[in-house]
Image (tube, rainbow, N blue to C red):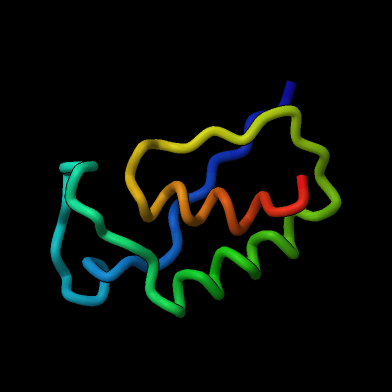
Length: 71
C-alpha cells in the first residue's frame, strides 16, 4: 500500500500571513491556489487512487476536489 500526502494550495490566509485552526471559518483557495491544485493533478495523473481523503477545511477540500477531479 502506498500513501500520498499533499498540502493544500495557496489560501486567502496564506496571502495575508494569517493562521486558521477553525474549519468553520471559510478560508478558500486563491486563484493561484487553484492553479497549484491543477498542476498537482497533472503530476498525479499516472497514479491510481482507491480513495482521496481530506480534512474538513474548505481550502483542503477544494484542493482535493481539483487535484482528484475525474477520478
